[in-house]
Image (cartoon, rainbow, N blue to C red; front, side):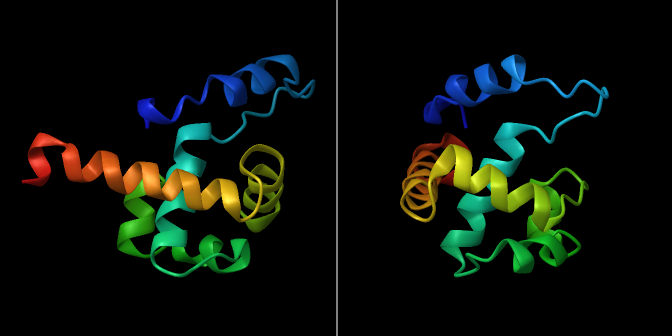
Length: 103
């Protein structure tokens, strides 16, 4: 995930902290969820939400279960739907293929 350069997203998180003190979902986790979801043909945030109760997405989400009202605005704002998520997915797959533990 470091290769994706999420600093711009983190900067927005810092600038627009929730005044109520609510903790936002981690950007890297949401990007991972969306990237994997696009890779397996699940582009809908409404399908990703229940998918976090299944093994693969649950592992990526760190046993968190963000709802579609969190996932969809994140994708629209930070990744651009669907082009940004597809680019993110390609970067994740590429990074995984070149990771030493993949071989």
